[in-house]
Length: 164
Image 1 (cartoon, rainbow, N blue to C red):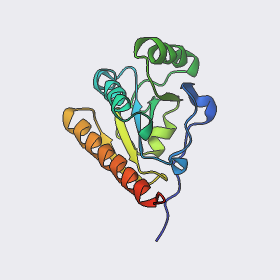
Image 2 (image 1 turned 90 degrees about the vertical axis):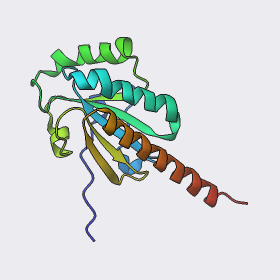
Image 3 (image 1 turned 180 degrees about the vertical axis):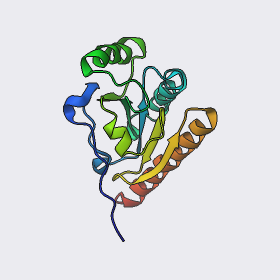
Image 4 (image 1 turned 45 degrees about the vertical axis):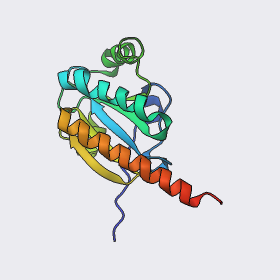
């Protein structure tokens, strides 16, 4: 059985809000990565608020990250995007999770996203288990239930491994 190559990951210098996040292959808990763009109405009105709700519900039991990408949107220079993105993350949305910048759109392209928002769900250890395009209620519901299931599995596994 072939093991897929790990997905390319943002460099530490590409994280513009919060701490750099390790690649999913190094995660000890499940998590989501959402690609978004500030010019995408669905991203700003539904996608990002959804990630904030997930953070409020699951907290440190999951990994959450947002990746601002130009894929499918205007290609702007980093100097034109970064200040606005930082203002959005810190002062407007007050995001409790890290945000990285994909100026060229190459990461989102390598991740085979269909547009923005697009969410990738990973199991602990980095297995890509779901890829969901969109932010409508049905997409959010599927991701919420998946995360609940993964967190519960991690909890049960941890209880079974604990010494008695």
